[in-house]
Image (cartoon, rainbow, N blue to C red):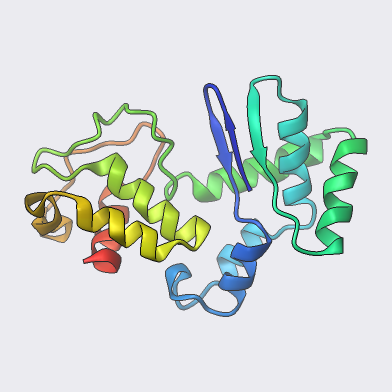
Length: 181
């Protein structure tokens, strides 16, 4: 699920993402168990929908329903209150994705000292990992200027971009470059 508000966002991996993780999709690594157990906690997606419904700053919620169990859960979100347990489930998920998920806040300036378009590259990685849109992500990567595509973040001893939200920028860029190059 992707929930977007005027000032902030919460992103989780919905039902389709979990099926890709569980079958060993290469985007999620060779040992997806830790990711699955963290993100697929009972009630986590329900908590995310309830959070969106209670939040007056949320303008749009894109909620996917692919089976009757998901429909039942989505309908429960309309009738059940947002609880402290819901808050804790979402806090656990946020802690897990913090080093992985770029919030596109612009605090990093969007460009490293060598010319890598950081926020763009991390957004493309989100297309591939979070939404299963590898072809679209790679197409966007290939549209970058050749000079930007040729920079290899693995060659830097340290990254000039420091994310205030804790994203492991260099590691994520190295992953994006390996996937899309």
